Amino acid sequence: MNTKSVLISGAGIAGATLAYWLRRRGFTPTLIERASRFRQGGYMIDFWGLGFDVAERMNLLPRLREVGYVIDRIKFVDERNHVRSEMGGDALRSAVGNRFISLPRGDLAKAIFDTITNDVEVIFDDVVTAIAEDSSSVEVQFERSEPRRFDFVAGCDGSHSLVRQVVFGSENQFEKYLGYYAASFSTTGYPYRNESAYLSYAAPARQVSRYALRDDRTAFLFVFPRDQPFAQHPHNLDAKAILRETFASDQWIELPEILKRLEDCDDLYFDSVSQIRMPVWSRGRTVLIGDAAYCPSLLAGEGAAFAMAGACILAGELQRANGNHAHAYRNYEQHFRAFIERKQRSAERFATSFAPKTRSGLFVRDLVLRLTVFPLLSAWLMRSFVTDRLDLPDY
Image (cartoon, rainbow, N blue to C red; front, side, top):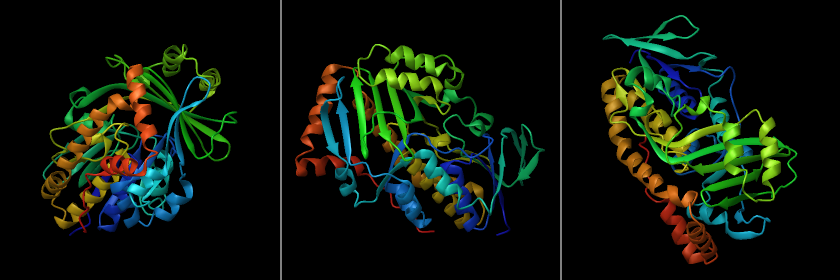
């Protein structure tokens, strides 16, 4: 196989993983990233299953355990911080044989990016604006750089993918809104800390969670429902004003301090809780991976894992097909689509229990968590949560 060049849009989890595997398979990847520098941080994710398997193949586990966290307790509290219900974090870890790490999403991305930073061309502060292909290659135009030709293009640029927009059409054709918005930010010197615990306050239809990080940092996650999505794109909304208005009436003892620190934060994430559902994941020489193609939403808890698995499978199929992109793209989708669709349906069903909209819903969730003190029931619940695995091909 002649060396094939691949432009990868997005230097996050999906893009960096794809670059890693493409380079190992004999391709020449180039990464382009809209941010001016690599971004770390982000909200905490639980990392297990397929993602853990891929990370193990990449010899990343020692690094991930070093930067990750062990969450020993998940606690739900009332207005005065009295515990309403809780669950031990070891229940889920035991269900997956301790193949489980909690870490900020951006820290996972950085650990992957560090494996390719000295070997792969990376262009920051630029985006794809047009893609035109012929029978032998693709000409890509950029906002700042000169046009270039590549053999293939991979869109790994998230649920608001520009590559998807250029090649497949507007986002609203593929977005399935799940009825919630989520926001996250971090601060230093926050007065309340529960080390190794994930603590949440929930009122009907609203939830605020916090967890302690290293270097005296604390991160927060907000979730709230909205029947219809905002008319404007999340990036164009006054997210701080929306959060102030939504949570101002809640009586949690910590909320005044949290909202005060929100005003000064410079790392606020704010977005709808949505899925991306597409009839096909490729067109011509362009293919989509991760959230750009099949975002499962924050509720699924495995978006990073699915991105890594998809990247691993796609690179393997391109090598197996000797660079024949049509065969590789078809096999990638056939191997992965049914699994992804099951996971997306599961996440959609989980939405109402993630942030219950009624007091009776909160009561049921608290009751279920209290029952996890019984080992057999806890083990059954956790196993049902982590079932439906997919075996990664050995390329």
